[in-house]
Amino acid sequence: MTREPTIGVLAVQGNFQEHMATLRRLNVRAVEVRKPEELEGIDALVIPGGESTAIGRLIRRYGLEEAIRRFTGPVLGTCAGMILLDRDHLGLVDVAVERNAYGRQVWSFEADLDLVEGGEPLRGVFIRAPRVTEAGPGVEVLAEHDGTPVLLRDGRFLVASFHPELTDDTRVHAKLLELVREEGLVRA
Amino acid sequence: MAELGTMRVKSGLAEMLKGGVIMDVTTADQARIAEESGAVAVMALERVPADIRAEGGVARMADPEKIQEIQEAVTIPVMAKARIGHFVEAQVLEALEVDYIDESEVLTPADEEHHIDKWKFRVPFVCGCRDLGEGLRRIGEGAAMIRTKGEAGTGDIVNAVRHMRAVFGTIKRLGCVDEDELYTEAKNLRAPLDLVRWVAENGRLPVVTFTAGGIATPADAALCMQLGADGVFVGSGIYKSDDPAARAKAIVEATTHFQDPGILARVSSGIGDPMRGLSAAAIAPEELLEARGW
Image (cartoon, rainbow over all chains, first blue to last red; front, top):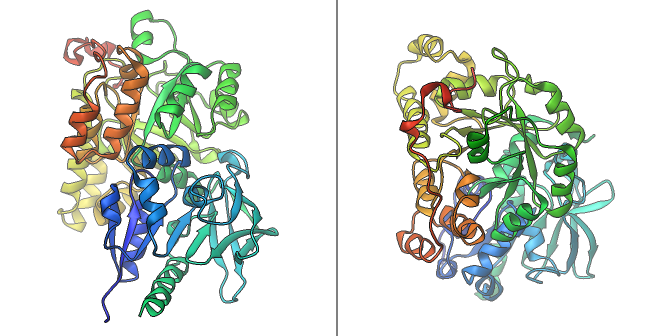
């Protein structure tokens, strides 16, 4: 069966619209997720950047935390999204993350990132960014900045400490769609 | 090579605040209550606008010591207000590493002609506007975020609505005028031509646009969101109400679920009385804070 995948973007707070726009550029259907029932019928989920404390509180208050734990499809978390997926929060990705590790906003930066798989460098926009301080053995590093992993894969989860949705580069989102296709093959 | 303070990094932080509530705070305790209620950022200032209005006097940047206490109390971004044109207050705030500077008409202006040249700073700025031209002039000076103005400290939403309608209405109209009419549009708006062109082509402002001034209830916040704001600033509306913590939380939920009247009805219940407020129409024109800014 070939049908275009539908990707949900957690839309309680943060820059979910840029993720929706990036996904649309990849010709997939993107829908906003604000309630637990809106996770049904989507093939993958994006947890966007925003304020992780605010998003964390809102998903707890609206039963989304449990619903995300039960969700079985691929998930991409960027910045705040990565924090929410880490060991200390939802516990779905085997990484320890330090919030605001690069300092306050005046230390926010952009830099070219070399991908482990090669190819053109990826422009990384780091905004009051979190830093991965420890990654479990099953976690694959896809890109580093100054010796710190900034793009990682743990099974069906992709996490980035930067904001791929703030540039025109669609490669990180394309990788999420690859995971959707892989999952599809496994299920078939 | 890492690049600091680029426009993408400056406006990027505002992108992360979208769909959220930024709350005025004057103390570390208020900042903790704001963070606890789900605020995406706090705005440090000397006095909330309702008190500035009641007490009078010169309103300035907050005490640096207070700002540092607030920075230590919370992990969400801390913004602070500088007076219009007071670039040294801005330098001080940048040295304190606040996350955003609000060049604000709520404080007493320091310059009657010039705003701060915001391109000179690595810290991003948010500025207020009553119409599209004023917003584009601020962006031309380097603002990385805009908030449409209301009449701060009144609890009356009518001016905020007027200015959102003015900004978003003009943007819609620019979308249908001929390209060769944009020169005169720019002249009439008193705004940079390249920005007017960008708005005409893209149908929005080039930076995140929040709204501020007069929000007192969850329904007020949702009204602003439905009118097209990316998020809201709230201050007096919380602290001058019966139960600030409960109201803050309710306004946060209303900002997320602004399209869901069922949720709005639920969060609007049982949060005590809103601030009594002051009708903006009853304020003498020369007393209006929103008219400051050029």
